[in-house]
Amino acid sequence: MAREARTFRAEGIVLRRRNVGEADSIFVVFGPELGKFEGVARGIRKSRSRMRGHLEPLTFSRFLLARGRTLDVFTQAETIRSFPRIGGDLERWAAASYYAQLVDRFTGEDAPHPELFELLFVALEALNDGSDPGSVSRYVEIHMLALAGFELQVDACAACSARLSPEETLLAPGAGGLVCRQCRPGAGVGRLVSVPAIKVLRYAARASLPQFTGLHIPGEVAEELQQALAGVIRYHLDRELPTARLARELSPGSNDPATPGADTL
Ligand SMILES: [Zn+2]
Picture 1: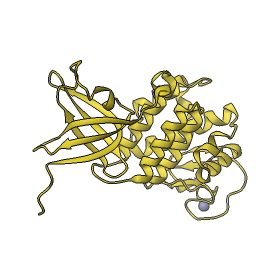
Picture 2 (picture 1 turned 135 degrees about the vertical axis):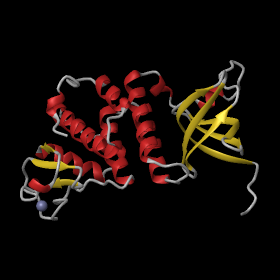
Picture 3 (picture 1 turned 45 degrees about the horizontal axis):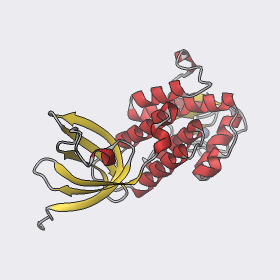
Picture 4 (picture 1 turned 45 degrees about the vertical axis):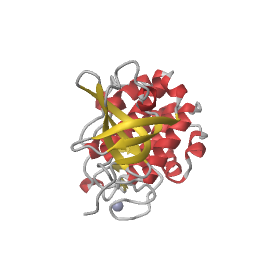
C-alpha cells in the first residue's frame, strides 16, 4: 500500500456538526471530489478559533486536514462561498438543512458524487438568491432521488411501460414511479396524484433549477406534490427526516401537519 501524505486539501459544504469534549467538534462535509468525509476541529468552540466561521453548517469552504489515526483533523479552513440570506431566514434555513440531511442520508462515506454536490450547491444558491423554497425543495427531492438511484418513472407506467392515460394516477415508490390502472393492485403503497401534479413532475425531471423555479405552481398542486414526494422519500429512507417536517411546517400556506390521514404512505 502506498504511503499516504500526512496532510491533504479538500473542499466541500458542511453538512452537520457534532460537539465532542469541551471545545472540539466533528464536522461532516460533502465535497465535489471526496464525497462525504468527516474530521475533527480541535478547540473550535473557543472564541479565538480562527476556523469557526469557515466551518459553519451550510458553508462551502476549502480545508487543510491532517491524517489522524481514527479521525482526520481540520487544521485550516477558508470560506469559498457562504449563503447569508439562508442564515437570516428561518424558512430558507430549514429548507437548506433539509437538503443537507437528505445528502447525508442518501450517501455513504468517501464515495465521490459530483452531480449530487452540484445539485446541493445550486439549490443553496437558489435559496440564497430568493427563489421560492417550496419549488427548490421539490426540485431537490426529485433530482436527489434520481441521483441516489431511485429515479421516479413518470413518463410511462413504472411496472409495465404502458402509456399512461391523462387521469389521476398512483405514484408508488416501491414500483418506481407512476403505475397504470392495470398494475395498481400489485404496486404496493402509494398516493394518487392529479394530472397537473404529474405535469409538474415531468417538467421538473427535465428542467434546470432556474427554469423550474420560474414555473408558477398553484397552491393545491404544490401541497399535493409536497406530500407525494415526502411519501416517496420516507419510503426510501424508511423514516421521515426531522428537517423535512420543519421545512414543511415553516412553508407558508401549509395546512399540514394536522392532516396525517391525507397521505396513504
Ligand atoms: Zn402498468
